[in-house]
Length: 308
Image (cartoon, rainbow, N blue to C red):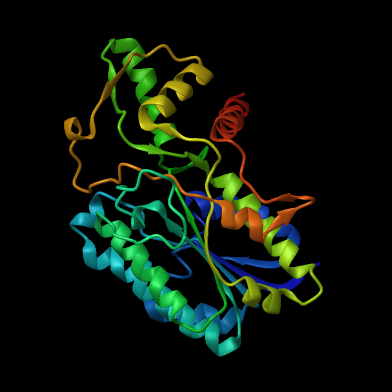
């Protein structure tokens, strides 16, 4: 099953790069970066949409500088909310559904269990507020949509916790200065490649169901949580990174209060992904991302092969 036109935004981001590879088998894929489609310049959104006239939009473009957003609220809202509204209006004109990505940061982290899609949102920071606003304008647009909330995203490229830990571990192994890592925030590190592969599987399943992609996506339209299986802390995630990569830097667990940042982070970032598994299937099983430890090892293997 192929589709005439799929438009993917956010080409140079962690997720966008993985989606650019994963979605190729599905059909005629147009991939745009900020240079072609600047979410801070809404006229460029209209121009690309009216030129490509896609049958499906996969929106991986976002403002993701969590701490900087505290002093750049306008920029974060413009990209994560206002631009999404413009995109949705253009999509509605041509009858194209949208796949969009959001974040665990729409929650305040005070719940003791993993969050489900219907839990009350209460973002602690500007980034989370801007992503929540994007969810809301898309849901209210009348366009069929799938919103995938994910958490602690990393990849073998870009800027992320994994690559930062590997760089700092190399430096601290030489200096002997321990790495201080927060131990009282929990979540599920999620590889961008897993998100991209799950997205491809969902699109293929919807398109192959007999009703056609647009109708099937409209029937499944809604919010879904999509994150790795398992749970950990930033400290234990760092420990696994160092162990699996063979680094011997020393880690020192600290509390959130000992590591102040401009943007507050939720204590609990765990997402319940049951709805995703119940709605979408791969073979005889519900769709689920791999365990975070398995994906970490695969990503480190990719990095190792890239250096050979």
